[in-house]
Figure 1 (cartoon, rainbow, N blue to C red):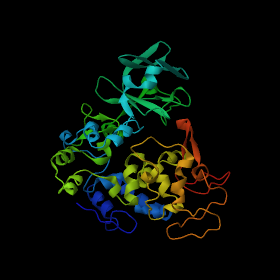
Figure 2: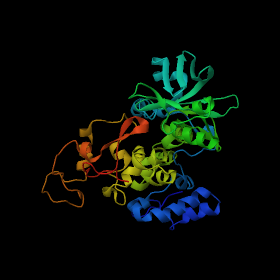
Figure 3: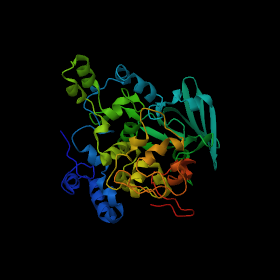
Figure 4: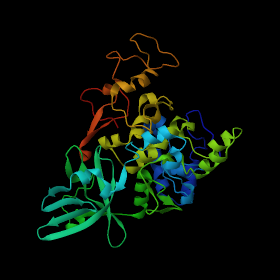
Length: 408
C-alpha cells in the first residue's frame, strides 16, 4: 500500500489515529504513549513529526525489526551480492553486519582467553577455548559456570553476552567486555550494589519479548510468525534486515526483461524512498527514535546513544530535511567515517561558507564565524557515558557552550 506524506515528511494520518487504534486494542503501552504525549508536546516541538517504532510496525509495509510470516522469504546476503557485489563486499565488514556472533567466534574472547573481574566478594571470569567460552562467577567456595551462547557487539565500545540454562531460557551475563578498559566490568545498567546471592550476581533472566527485540536489531530473519527463530537466523544486520525479505525480488530479477524493471524493484524495499522524518525513524527502529527513547524513560547523557532521538531535537531539524537524515552522513554499506573533515561538505550543503555571506533558501544556515572545517568537532560534542566507559557523538547539532548543562 502506498503511503501518503504530510509537508513535514511523516506518514499522514488523522491526529491521534494510531494512538486511539492501539488503545482500543488494549495495548497499555500505547495508553502510556498518549499520556506522555500530552505531557511532552510543549517540549517535543518538531519531533512530533516522528513516531514510535510500534506505531510504524502497526502500519502496512516493511519496517525494521518486524516479524515475517515465513523464513522462505529470505535469501541471505550471498544472493544479494550476485547483483550488488560492491555494496555487499563493504557492508559485510561494517559494525552492523558483525554485531552478533556465537560467543566461541568472538575475536575479543579468542584473543584474550582468560578475562577476569572482581566486585566485592564476587569473582567473575570468562575462559575461552576452541569450542567453548565458559562464564564463571565465584564467591568463597561457591562456583557457578555456564557456556556463553551469543556475543553482542563488535567491541568497538563493548561486547555483551547471553547464555542459556537447562530451562531453555536466555540469561544476560552481568559482566561485559569494554574496549577502553581492555577487560570486563558490569554490563551497562546491570550493576547491583548488594546481590542476594551468586545467581543474582551472575545473571539476569531475559524474557521472550525482550529476546525477540534484541535479536531483531542484531540479526536478520530472527522472528518468524511472531516467534524468535534462533536456529535459522542470520547473525548480524545483513541486506534483508533493512530491505526486507528478498526472495521474491531475486526471483523477479532473474526472470525480468527490460520492459519490466520497475515491477522487480517494487518487490524489495528501498529506504531511500522514505521522506526525512520516516527515514530517521527507520534507523531509529534500532538506534532509538524520539518516542522510543522518551517511552523508555532514558534521560541525561545516556540519551546520547540514541542518535536519531538527539538529531530530531536539533534546532536545524525543523520539520525534517533530507540533508540531515541519517544516511546523508552515514552510508550503511560502508565503515563508519571517523574523520571530522569528511562531514564538512554535508554541513556546507546547508550553511553558507563565508562569514557575512547572505543565507539563501537552499543554504539557510549562517556561516560559522570560528572555522571553516571540522565542523562536527565543535557542533556535535563528544559526551562521556560512565556506564559505557566511552564517549559518544551527540547528534543534537548546536552551538556547544563551555560549562553548559547537558541539553535534554
